[in-house]
Length: 89
Image (cartoon, rainbow, N blue to C red; front, side):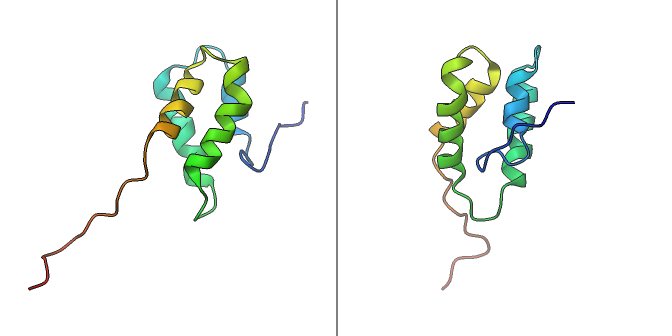
């Protein structure tokens, strides 16, 4: 049995494993990416972590759908918090 590859950027090895799987589509990669993001500690800089993962895996897997998902993750700006409720009068 092999040891699962992990790093501080991918402590559960989800992204690493995704790149090792054949036949994954974009939807499956997005699901894995979401699972990875939810599992990261609160307050993590997800765009920076995503960029590091893209740097680590993208060059050797340019056509893998996870590379495209990571690229999307680095392209998105953090959404501004939404105001809820009625405006103050």
